[in-house]
Image (cartoon, rainbow, N blue to C red):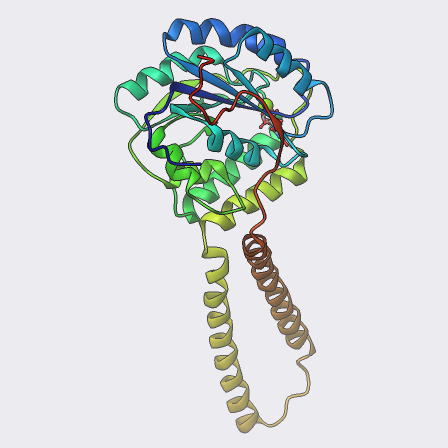
Length: 324
Ligand code: UDP
Ligand code: MG
């Protein structure tokens, strides 16, 4: 599915994840079409409906009636944006793919610049958000903290402000598709593969309608996924902590023994005992928790369940596509 032995039949695959975006579908295509037609490239628009409960899929099918290059895919339930993007990349048959949010926060008008950078030789083109005005102050702060932490401890370097609005050359698409993991922190996966890249800045627009699907807990879970997929430092750090504390405990033990031998038994010591017990108890629970986080992810990988399930799709033929 992932690697193409034949020449890709399209120049561009546009990949859009939709989750209850029924209200923006029409506006989105109104802005997308003029941009795409000006490019003078052949393209397909893969619309992954990620288990919407509104009329998103019906709207996408209506768009297909207007233009056969629109290809709606409906997932069996809400699998999450990362799974929706994975599905889109699996189905994409273009020489390059562009992933872009469907809520119009990513301006389609930027696509020609991405394509230009790709033609200039970049295998991956990141659209870099130059503002975060659309986010609340708490989310802005936490996002900044997460990326700072990620940069320090993770094995891949995410450019500051890089999101899911990107262009990926076929080699990158194939590389990402070849990665079997279930915990898909797409930003990380796409960056991990490497290749030369270019950056194109853009201003994030406010959401056209509805509200963000990311609440605080979901974001925290996402951040954990990102960190644990790309760093083993949280696991290894406990070896160091444990060694330091053990060394300290050994020294303290020797000191106590010597003191008892020299000055006799000293009864007071309740406070230091309690502090020691609580401190060590806390550290142990924390490190167990971290191991649990990794173990849970190993469990998910080992089960090897599919990342997404497709309920229905239109416009994907195994025979040569004549819709273009
Ligand atoms: N999305 C999705 N599945 C989900 C949540 C979101 O496909 O479970 C899509 C959503 O339709 C949008 C994009 O992912 O096109 C970004 O979502 P959102 O705007 O909620 O995130 P934010 O912009 O706040 O990061
Ligand atoms: Mg959004």
